[in-house]
Length: 308
Image 1 (cartoon, rainbow, N blue to C red):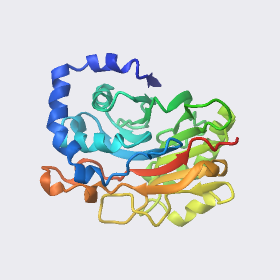
Image 2 (cartoon, rainbow, N blue to C red):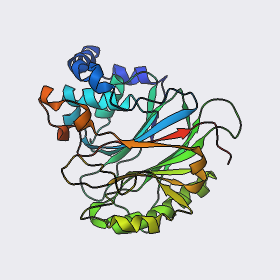
Image 3 (cartoon, helix red, strand yellow):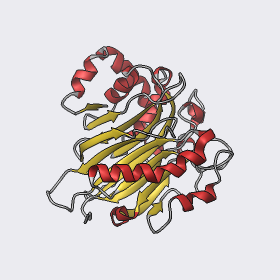
Image 4 (tube, one colour):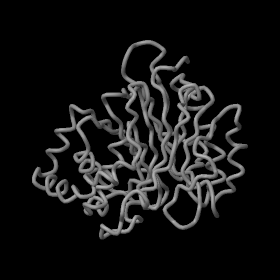
């Protein structure tokens, strides 16, 4: 695990020549500053007692994505609206693309990143970006997977919102997942066991299970999800009627599911960011699929109503 605090961020940025960062940033300005487009992306809640948590499979994030300023302009605009964003599918063999992307974000953002996961040569990392002014990382751990169920073992981070002391602070476990499509049924069925492991590890009942579940289409019968996550124990926020993929097909691959104890913290606001509709791609030299083949999904939570 690598944890980067805001105090350490300038050291990361020194690893990339300053003029190179400026060139990337200014070449991305048209994507970032188009107000009529940016305004359609959900803005982080203005109320001080709410936060928005995103999950986003940024398809094959690495050197190629970072080499395209139009792509990075859209991605930074999206990420900059989140308080926390759980990213799946970081494919780069090195950390440099992650560091370069963080250098384009406002100073308030920090991140944690898990180890490279996968049985084949195509390994991935889970990456969680967060506003360090609003959150403290209390711990992190990769699921040990004693039965070798997962292609990419889930990765969880234990967060607490900053602010007044006491039980009213929203402390929660964010569990990031990228389910192997061909083993979706087996891996999804094991997720409650993984959530219970983290709950017991940190003695925290509020678990937010997010990520690319591949929980639809050819890979998974979405009607089975409610039996894996029964309503008396979980709330499925991103439900089967939502489309989370850029393709013409209508599939709910990406999910946010919370344990029942976290429902008191959930505001009821959620959504899918359809960036292919929110941006006029006729102005760009890229297609929406160059950004990702998935849409980000999000849910909003209160920071001061936690009673556990």
